Image (cartoon, rainbow, N blue to C red):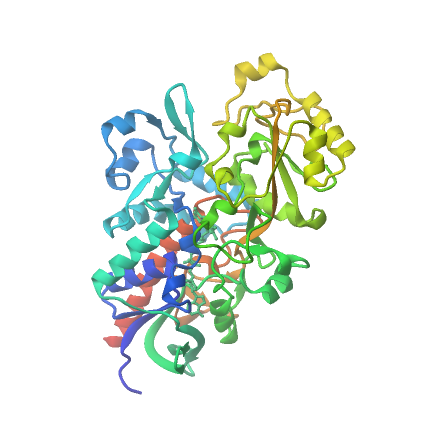
Length: 503
Ligand SMILES: Cc1cc2nc3c(=O)[nH]c(=O)nc-3n(C[C@H](O)[C@H](O)[C@H](O)COP(=O)(O)OP(=O)(O)OC[C@H]3O[C@@H](n4cnc5c(N)ncnc54)[C@H](O)[C@@H]3O)c2cc1C
């Protein structure tokens, strides 16, 4: 066999893949990136994000050192950024995954998060505080909450542009419209290259290492219904149409072991008028994440979750899934004039399904929900809310304020303001799938494991297609962080593997 033209081939060109490519290059490898999508659909799911990252840090002074390096003292004086330390990150991850997240993966993610943010900044990614979505103005200062407080400038598209510019500056080739279809392996299991479907037909590419970073199976309705369950073939997809499980399937075909929560996925409340896949103009603005400020009912007019159970970042995934078990996969978020002004910016785009009513009956009629039932639900909810004096003294949307209902089920545990000030405004949502949780098993060097729990030499994985981190739920901002941490590591180990073969 001739000398391979590339040391490392990275499959995919989203955040995880681009981090892997930059890192492999940094570690001396000749790198090629393969991207199934055409250039005009570049960036994978990473493009559709808000670019928000969750990482461990010790507050604003710490973050300003090498992440928020552009921030002025004046701006810093006007904001409060709570620390997000190692233990807190761990507890948050374990809380939402009910202790199921793999310990080794969890600590690798957490301990790698802070250095990865500084590394991204060194590689040209610029960051700002997430003012619009993760802070409230309280007593003249911007209070950040929920743990996802820093975003890439320009959101997901900005992040992808920064990383692609870096690849281009480093001379890393990205081949668009070229999807990996098969992995090549020797008799001793070592990876020797892969087959791709390119615009002109099938091609074989030789290399020493392959990094699979080509997303989960969220855009494959057949796999969705097979693994997530009945009805999930009908759910909308929030991001790219190209994440069809190819990387996972290619690895399983050569004996990789399936790992993680294959019946689980990240999904959220998503405007019911949204198209089947993500829209590159609207991006993530079809999501409707301000439900903690109001109530959610199904088409029978019944509440079905505790909207104020915890911060939005920690409940939105479970609630996205809960919508799938409601009639017509539909949920309606209702607010009154006390909170409408506080809703996130995604409620003010023009692509929304919104109904307004001066009375609850009028609102119910516009929503096609039985008016008696909706009235009964809202009256029971209002009667269970705390009295006005307690609300005046304690209500604070930036913390878990303990303003909770009494005597109804489901309860609303925080931010329980009665729905009393018309006009009443409602937004109609269904479930939008973000990404799937099940995938491949990796070891401490990011190498994909086979069914005998042995590494497949030369095969690495990063990003959405790694299983074992997220189960049932997910703490917001961890998808990009995991892609960067594990992508960076995969690139480094893939380059090291190639180096040993070259020696
Ligand atoms: C609307 C939305 C908002 C989100 N907001 C956030 C957020 O603010 N913060 C956060 O942390 N996470 C967020 N997420 C989750 C986040 O997008 C993912 O966790 C993360 O981007 C996954 O990165 P990745 O590199 O693994 O996959 P992707 O970015 O999806 O990249 C995978 C790439 O592989 C390509 N590909 C697929 N098959 C092949 C093949 N056979 N050959 C070659 N290429 C292939 C795809 O075209 C794609 O470009 C959001 C997701 C969506 C959809």
